[in-house]
Length: 223
Ligand SMILES: Nc1ncnc2c1ncn2[C@@H]1O[C@H](COP(=O)(O)OP(=O)(O)OP(=O)(O)O)[C@@H](O)[C@H]1O
Ligand SMILES: [Mg+2]
Image (cartoon, rainbow, N blue to C red; front, side):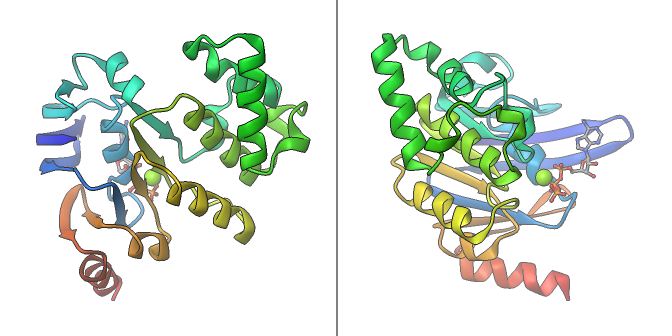
């Protein structure tokens, strides 16, 4: 994943300024104050947001030119899990995600059963997805993304709504993943366990490197 002088501007405002970097580590955290541009940065990675100037490339694919190709590579967990639910029932929502894989019915059922067990959601299989608690929705959203087997996972505050047990479930799920994870978070314990941390501040990358250094810089900003 490569940013080449990427800027995001809206009328009268610059949200991200001239970002150039290459992301190749398997675990990268994005931290920074509210409004610093973290979600916008994350959305650039799967083509949901496009740079107003500069480029963002995922495995060489330009997100502005081939957003569909990019979305097949990059799974995205929204900050608000309600944005991610597309079908009324939990089971239907998961089945919808499996469509692209073209499994037969038994294959789909087995995949749904496996992912529900993995996230402790088996009892919710026939429930309306919109009635789940915030934390359960977040787990369902992550389950949906993993079913599509993306190469990269971009997670926007995956643990914000979760109680301690479900936070642990998400962290364990992340630990077990082969995929590259880029995680926006205010949970500095998560960032501390990653390989590389980026600190955003007013749309700029203010610090980029080993977790201990970047987290210390962030703490110093908060005074
Ligand atoms: N499409 C848009 N039009 C206008 N302003 C926008 C747009 N998208 C984001 N912004 C503004 O850009 C800034 C950065 O937003 P962003 O959502 O990326 O911040 P964030 O770091 O994720 O914050 P938080 O920690 O609160 O989630 C905010 O001030 C936001 O209001
Ligand atoms: Mg955000």
